[in-house]
Image (cartoon, rainbow, N blue to C red; front, side, top):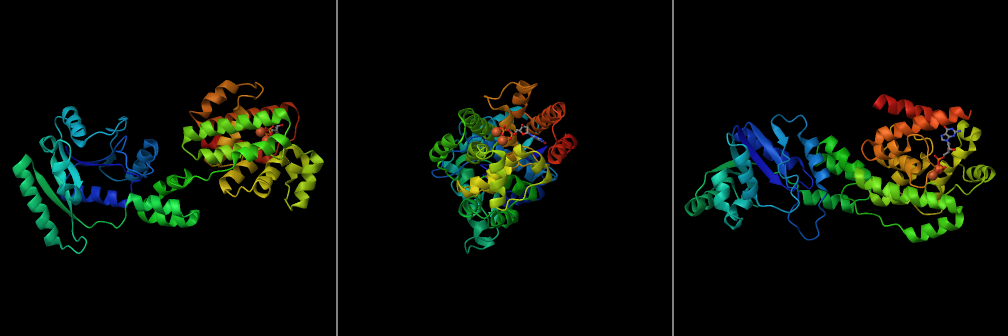
Length: 405
Ligand code: DGI
Ligand code: FE
Ligand code: FE
């Protein structure tokens, strides 16, 4: 097979990368192009480099449905930055019958001799150079001229085969995408922007995992002190347990640790109130209660808690507020924050042992939706045993998660 190698940090991948891959494949009649994100990029000051898990996943979503364009995990496990000649040596050795074209940009060509071991690179692969049709006022002829001159001098110095690939660069860079997300708090504006330069699934992934957003710092100390005053000691201990469990799950599932930490802390912030106080609070703040909440008032602390989190503690983040408001019954199609708080509430270390608890704890870190489903089953079983009224939302949530599996 004839294979093009397109390496880079892909932080994140965007349509510019995909267009290069498609153009190289077409122009050089390649069988495949391997998108090859580096496992550990060389350090650049001030850059937010996403975990490899996210970078590779976004590339996967990008390559879905693209014939012959695949993500290569060749560099996934490298824990330190590595040089291209090392990767190519490895490919040569492991794919002796394939032919490789190493794809680089025009700018990279111009300082190619300053790369580490360029003579090895050209020994292992043909060099495919993306030549800009027009660039910074330069014409195609001009670009071609400087590329050809550089190639001639490289051939003299280190030998090698070089092929020019004409292409029209899209005016976008990963840096621009990261900067736009960091600078724009409005999620709709961000979505609209990213959609222009990514595919829908990759965009959804970036949005739902809050990637590249500047983390909001909450005043955890003040909030903890306030909760300690309000809640019974055992409830406060439970609160801290949910908070840290939610943080651990945020790390496991790649979402904002800060959001999970604050939602975990505040999820039961209304739990100090009596039934009467909950009803009074709801009516004083025009919070509409469902029939189920009227029948089973212990459910109300979730909705009232979300209101207090905003009103008393100044939390405005919709993910945090939503996770608090659905933490008791769940709801169909919860997002990752909802699921993490729902599950943490059940599995935190101070919980009294309940059937299957160890299994559910384990499951939370391998299959979060399955953990949600097991908890709902347990809860409904327990409610039936005790002849308690079951909130239809709890049942609908279980039905949803059973269908999902
Ligand atoms: O506030 P926590 O005690 O930490 O936990 P939680 O917010 O999950 O509340 C648990 C209580 O809510 C527990 O007593 C079971 C109850 N619950 C959950 N779903 C339903 C429910 N109670 C009724 N009546 N109906 C439900 O569907
Ligand atoms: Fe609760
Ligand atoms: Fe709780």
